[in-house]
Amino acid sequence: MKPRRPAAITRRTILRRLLATLLSAGPLSGLAAARRKPSAKAEPAPMSNEPVPGWRPDHTVIVILENLSAFEATKAQLKRGDGPVFASTSNWRYLNELASQGARFTNAHFTSTPYGSALPTRPSQPNYLFLFSGHHQGVLPAWFEDKRSPFTGQALYDRQGQLLPSPRQTNIGVANSNLPDAWLPLTSPNLGAALLQSGRTFASFSESLPYPSWNCATDDRMAACSGAQAQTDFYRRKHNPVVNWTDQVAPTSPRGLKGDLAKHVLPVSANLGFMPTQDPVLKQSFRGFDKDADGKPLPFDQLPHVSIVVPNEQHDAHSNTAQMADDWLRQNIGAYATWAKAHNSLLIVTFDEDGSTDASRGNGYITGKARIPTLFFGAGVKQGDFAGRVDHLNVLATVLWLNGALDRFKSDFRQFHRVVDGSGSEAEQEWLNLRPVTEIFRAP
Image 1 (spheres, one colour):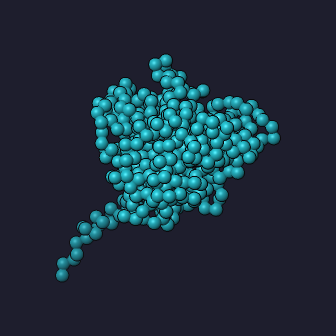
Image 2 (image 1 turned 90 degrees about the vertical axis):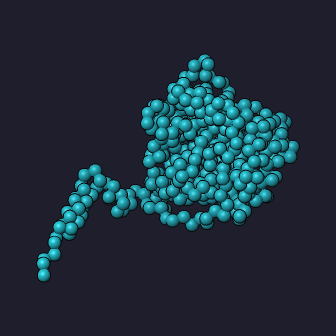
Image 3 (image 1 turned 60 degrees about the vertical axis):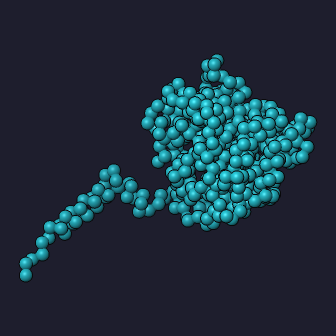
């Protein structure tokens, strides 16, 4: 008998040894270790216990409005008909029409900063960041001490929200100002990246945004604007969370053009105006919400799977009347709402925070925690009031869940924010509350 030829075995042995050598040393060793065992600072995410959605919308549109309470109003708001939003006496006639035909949340709340703190303090911007990413991204109120922030002023609370023995002049939270360029682009998990990584599509449509690579705004301490671009009391960068995950510092770089989903960075093209725009930096025309780049009407089935719509400050109830905001909602979103009901799609309307109507702990703006209006309307939504407690994290989790992206997002969130079970950390509390609202949807 002839001896067996060892050539094939030798090749396999060499390959195995070579692979073992590569994985035990050099640049690939970290990757191998990451696959072998979890980080000592962050535990692996368990499998989701959430049921599989019985209904999946073809398209979802989330509209974010401003600064009013669902069931309470100040004297001025009451006199003007701005609130309570869910009252029959308010000027929110179209919004209440949608609420009466969909799921109306009667115990919805904004997200306190820090999350889970007894003090429900907030400026506006963190609520948008919570709704988009499940975390405030280090953006604290202007009355918080924050050594990482370049802004200075009088702090009343420390970084954890504990009252200081006395006010002190120091670095304070970013609040509603532009996030410092050194922080940008943000690389944390977010709704848009999770959807794109899951094979879905996403875009944000901000009314009065001049063009996608425009990184200016008009609030105090914001980036300077040219006279032609300073649209006072219209577009506000603080109300546009998506812009912070796009590479506005270098929008023509490969990452700016294409994003970097491995690091949760979005392409600049995810940051769109509500109307079509011409971007002089990118030298490109971009679509709007219901019009193509040339201004021609687009059918709603050409929308991304998930869209965020941010009206400007004249139309979101921030700086004008409820009547103005409600009319804008009817005129600009009403056609989509009607279409969604007939075409297996979903509309969500929520508010960033309450109307400073709760003064039970002192200053209603700083420590108030009145309920906010939130409603779901669409083809698969049950009609009626939903009394369960929800906040912006539950709305975020519900959209992710309906689009098959919740498990991915929670796993990425857990790793990025170093969630450790039983730690009681802010990130753990956020992660634990990334629970979708499943009861309001009909089975097919």
